[in-house]
Amino acid sequence: MKIRYLVMALIVLSFTSLFIGVKDITPLDLLDLSDDKVQIMLQSRFPRMVTIVIAGVVMSISGLIMQQLSRNKFVSPTTAGTMDSARLGLLLAIIIFPSAALIEKMAFAFIFALAGTFLFMKILDQVKYKDTIFIPLVGLMFGNIVGSISTFFAYKYDLIQSLNTWMNGDFSMIMSGRYELIYISIPLVILAYFFANKFTVAGMGEEFAINLGLNYKFVVNFGLVIVALSSTVVLLTVGTIPFIGLIVPNIVSLYLGDNLKKSLSHTALLGAVFLLICDILGRIIIYPFEIPIGLVVGVIGSAVFIYLIMRRKAYE
Amino acid sequence: MVEVKSLFKKYNNKTVVEDVSIEITKGKITSFIGPNGAGKSTVLSMISRLITKDSGEVLIDGKDMGKFNSNELAKKIAILKQANHINIRLTIRELVAFGRFPYSQGKLTKEDWKYVDEAIEYMELASMQDKFLDQLSGGQQQRAFIAMVIAQNTEYVLLDEPLNNLDMKHSVQIMKVLRRLADELGKTVIIVIHDINFASCYSDYIVALKDGKVIQNGPTEQVINSNVLKEIYDMDIEIQNINDNKICVYFT
Image (spheres, rainbow over the protein chains, first blue to last red):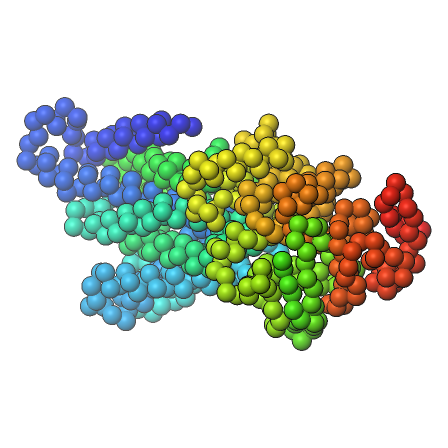
């Protein structure tokens, strides 16, 4: 796949995304926009499109970094307890500091996401049987344990509804004034670019990395901070979107390999394109109603995921 | 020169390396031999800072290893562990280019690429350099890893069981390359090897270990000797001279 096709698809789909919705706005209207249409564009359509693109980029890159650092193709923030830990942190923040500002709650959730991810990596170190499928299962179990703690507190403090909002990704509530947090992840993506070569070396394993003079522990920890912070940001703005951090990097790895310097841009673009497609589908299938993005991604994503597993089996 | 002075290492109160002192001669091939669990790989890993030592000293060109920073050391010593299960999808050329990481941190200069090209040529991998590692046979993979180490251009090249899982043809090929590294490029090669006949035919010096201790250490013809081998392996091993090589016969 050529990178320019991805760029073209991104532009076309982003543009398309702006013109889908209950209020009929066509590209022709751009020439002569009435006030209410300007409002809709600025208040809802544009923030939504930006959020989708950034979330797609960020989650794919987080997945890629995690797969590289854990040296396992099936690890991602949604299968390693990162998202679950962030949810627990956010829930506890709401219970313990109900009056704290959003950014403070986010910081609290971030600390939990980071701690959870570190714990998962520690568990990985202890597991002797490093089977490709076994490791993500450990991650899922770990995530479910954290998730059940969240559910317990959520029931106790009557917060089940909030918990469910973060469980299921949803772009329909994105409006100006409540999506800007996602911009925090842009510098993280840029940092990931600067560290691309170091992540690749770390992905060759600790002994390889030390041989090449890399400060292995620092690079791994730094990568996990990027992953935890961006997962938290996405959780707070759109909720959890399954599979994308898992399948997008895997597809790119199939045709480009694991040299991050080469594959990072492709992964970012494909992530955004994939999420835009899923979102557009979700908005037109039962128009004028909407299918939640989590569901669309889940259906398409699980099909691709099964294909990837089968392909891997055939390959082994 | 690498000097190792009374190295110790314990795992859970079990001593695996005990008072190992050796000097490794520059520009030669030194092989570590010995039965399983003798501590060969552990010593190699401590020399290359992959694992920490409990006590003792490792001096590289007279300077204590701990005084080097990791990146400096990566330009002096290259270590290749048994790398059969690396599962990252890189092409040969990308892998070899990462051998230049200590010099360039990934932003390769023209000069870096020259080293990469030379290393690929040296290992005769040019025709397949854009293939992914997971598309290669075990022998080709091992050659690719050695090419990376060559591109790293270190004075010392340490290899932990480089012949593991290779067939005879590829084993001979790898050993010949190591010989050339020492003879043509003046590298100091240190290997852990199980096959004593490969050790006998290709190395200049042999360090024989058993139960974490050095039993014998010296030129190859001195160590490949029935009495010494009996002490190390607890086996009667007959030694025959075939085409000027000392061959150990231990199969029956």
